[in-house]
Image 1 (tube, rainbow over the protein chains, first blue to last red):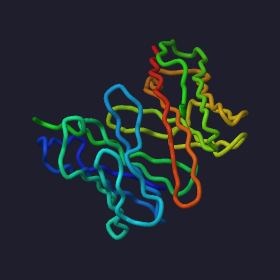
Image 2: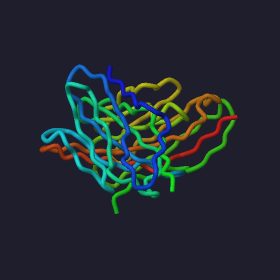
Image 3: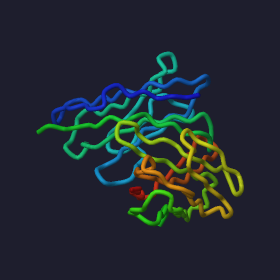
Image 4: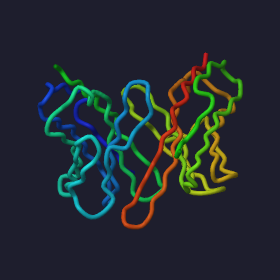
Length: 113
Length: 115
């Protein structure tokens, strides 16, 4: 069965600093990988996804993530944090369309002025 | 406008009183899912459906039932709710197409409290 770990339940960065949110997965075959963002009292919004092709994936709001099969990782980065990036971020994995979709426990990102 | 709707948005009920949370999508998506979100645990999948009359258990199905009689609807049924089912519930619909195309939309959530 797949599982997802996110290192750091809470990450704080200064405005303008690099954002790095870590995601590692366990899977017997290459999975589909996703990052979602959840703002307070709201639902989830897809930031970016890896399904096939290029391993460096660009998403919305300046975020990107790189699928590294050898490291079973899919870390999320943004070169310069903005106050509006403060939210909870979830990494998720599924093996194929419509199957069991597994989320990580989430990382809360705080952006300090 | 593409959307997933859930009703009710908030519900307070008592142990053992059957309830249904409805979910509807207007995008003709094949796949629909239910999740519960609890602090520190992220979202955990309860049930998912790959099409009409095709459903399967997710990671935490105990105490829940679902049905998919129509493509657009995927209700979540709690036959005998218990306090440990107090949670925030999300419905989602999704589609995968060729070339890596994927989209998934989440509903606004239903906050359920069972006393």
